[in-house]
Image (cartoon, rainbow, N blue to C red; front, side, top):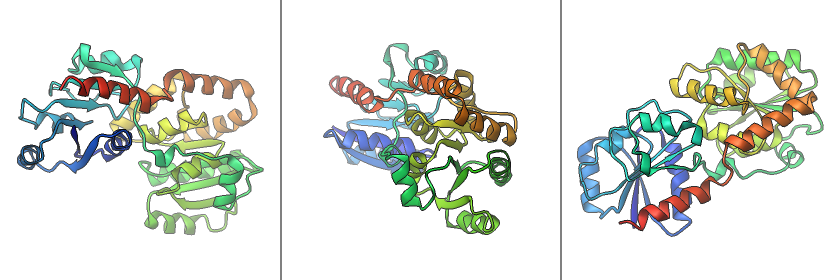
Length: 308
């Protein structure tokens, strides 16, 4: 079966799904959606066995009734109307099943799998090795602050709060691109406890090196942190899906989202010192974030593919 993985705005989930399926014998193609005409043309010419997407807009543009459709949730919320009728819906948690059903998912076709994430941020190592590879002292507490999706003000106040409230803590500032690296390297050039590194190709290394990870609630990154049982501290974001993800994590104790950057820094420090607080967060992460998503997704996809 040849699978078309199509996205318009959210490529991360399709990349992760491609990894899972390709490693298990499926022929996968990833396509960026541009318009309905180009999608229909591609479906006709390439004998596609199934269309997979995490975006209803893409799935609803598939007008070929003989092509089965699969919706893969990319967030811990459903902000889109699922008007495209799919043969399989994979969702992140049993706690959210009714949210997706109320948004249009067909009840009998809903499966709980968790959110697929790429191996580039799940291939972890021990803290000592990771810190050595980055070039920092791993004997002291290390906090990683990921800038992607956060405003410059949020990043600056977070780093400054950590430096002020969590003495002796090293900060890895994982930036989105070379422009940010130049900016933050200049901004913190006099702070020996701040190490600026590009997130690309270094995401799992930064997670491995850290005792706590500060990030906006990007589903892929937050899921990777939770699976690693690292302290998850959620930065504020104006993006609707990130705000909803943060609410899901915070309400269940999977992560912490304070009202201010100082609240976040203070709580991260408390997690370092309190075995009870850290245990509670770790147990919540284990309870609500599946660690066997690849197997669950593959099992459901095999069942789905056998029908066609």
